[in-house]
Length: 639
Image (cartoon, rainbow, N blue to C red; front, side, top):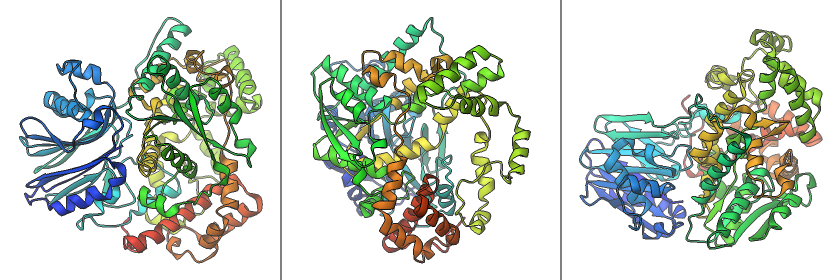
């Protein structure tokens, strides 16, 4: 976790060093160990450093090559160091930082260098020979990159939006379309932000800015046509285990104590147990684990599974009583760090966990975030079997799913085998008969209809969510769709800013590019078999983590805790926002509809209403703070 900032003036104006210094200072929380800035004529780069790896303690940013023609600022951890050094002709014993490797890679491969890098990175290189700025962001979007561009005048970039807002030239105009996306919600736009003139460099993209303007290209995307074919279940499991072990191993590189999130589910347990096994082969360091517990909401509590992991030894456990925290706790600080409204209702739990991580002086924390998506449950496989008339296999999967996940086999049969066979036109007729005329139904009944019409929200939803209307064509198509969704980089950006608030670096083994590509290419029967989803992972991790976890079906649903916390801990704030006159929301939200939803929520505690209430409340509170701190004008924003 570090920070990058930069300014480039294509018109030749010299960069004002005080502007650069303000940007660097605004991101001091991301890198408390060192800060630096460099400027020459129309370009300036800045950086703050958080030391995490042994090599990072020798890092100096911004840094230049021997000729002084290439200058780099980076927030990066490069995981394929050994292979990269061999490709670059660097001796294994030579001491070189990750930043040094990026510069050498650019010297050799130019703008194709991101294709050669594995790891989490966002960087910019000023190329004095070409008089251009080259920028890149990692494959999955783990490291953030925001920018502002005014043609022929100014290009500025930073790890967080607040650094761009340090520049007087950057306007503060609300992006109404993003407000609508938030309320629906729609995540497929990977470039926009709540600020009309501030954009995100999408994951897996590179960008060059020069006097001729800005050009952007994708350098990586998932190949849905690739297939992995091995000889047996055992070979698939062994290949998965090797890749997963490497994904964890390369993320253990740390000069400081290591932490791991441990919820008790398959993913966090897999990461923690694999890390423990790998460390036992080396320096045998202990791992600090951080777990949320729920004494007052026992249906959310996972302590039996957490304890099963801890009983293996090698861990120092820490607990956070997540049922005692308000979803609106620390909101001023959260808003300052997030810069935008955040679609993350359980962020308050992560905030509590990160507080505990910071108190233990841990700088690197492993997180099993979204192994579900990487490995895939492959539920649409049931529909595939029905379409192909494989009735015996279909019956086997339905019986297995019903038993392993404690759900009705009739429900599985109807939802997963019958519904996918219904032709699209028939589904549309059925929706019309039920009064649902929209191809892509908007999921929030409290949106102001005049606002939705003004910005063309339904047309936008149709365009953005077109491939989500109806069941996926296959389990693999569903897997690819979930991996390619804009929700993943959005969630990673929210998590990044939360970790940055505590000067931490979160690392995600399940977002290793090699592991994702392998899992997507697997045959579907390696993802589901006998009603066991993610079966290749369950087979692969035999002996790594407890059988109690390896063969568990579902996992705890945190919604009851969120609903309770909203009603109990956050009730006074929600009452004040919704029952008063939240005029700041009026042009976006149908206030009578919102109040009716809130009354139903208070009387019944319905989970389906909780998200509408939470989004409206946090959006209103964010608007109030922006009006105070950034002089936001929410009445004259552009669509």
